[in-house]
Length: 247
Ligand SMILES: NC(=O)c1ccc[n+]([C@@H]2O[C@H](COP(=O)([O-])OP(=O)(O)OC[C@H]3O[C@@H](n4cnc5c(N)ncnc54)[C@H](OP(=O)(O)O)[C@@H]3O)[C@@H](O)[C@H]2O)c1
Image (cartoon, rainbow, N blue to C red):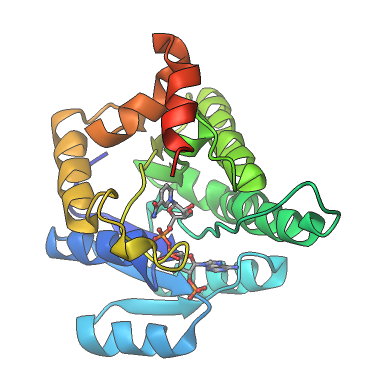
């Protein structure tokens, strides 16, 4: 994908990776539209950074279509979709009550990206060069004990990305999967204070360097995520699970 001159929509950019990516892409000469539910943050981002914003709840199909219509009406040249929005909530499957969290996680992390891709895929094919950047996780490949549905939702994103890349191969749409390691965001409360996690700025810098050095890469893997991503292939699956879950 080209690194400048794009028009990018990032639903899930009111905070964390999405916001950092939005600001970095704006500085690199792209037009960026930020989406999310928190109206006060959308207003603040618009006022402070001059980015276009749109209210969207990806668990609501009507909201996704309304946001799509609004974004495409203002930006008919939109050519990059980054379904970034996600939640990560601990669950305990030894109690029946885990189902509420599991359903919410699937609705956001699995059905949300499906709704977004469905809403934009025909438009994206009408542009000469488009990209869908899906967002998985190292936990798609090595499980964190406390978040079974989250891990599985990201494994879904990984395999869905692998497969739609095959279906879209004859079109103008490329599919790139961003597979982050643990980062200092507030995805889970307090996570931004965990020193073992990679600072957001370092992740964005390394990600942009990888995209620049490997313009045809289908998966963006910073060094920190490789032990999780390749544990099974490397024969270190058991010890990587043990290390990941030792804290
Ligand atoms: N941080 C990590 O360690 C890490 C590692 C691997 C993968 N990831 C993935 O990276 C993505 C971003 O996470 P983050 O770390 O940046 O966390 P974050 O700061 O909590 O950001 C999550 C974003 O998703 C949005 N969102 C959540 N539910 C939504 C909904 N129903 N509709 C619309 N937007 C919604 C939030 O905006 P509103 O609340 O304003 O709606 C927010 O902008 C997630 O998919 C996450 O799974 C993160």
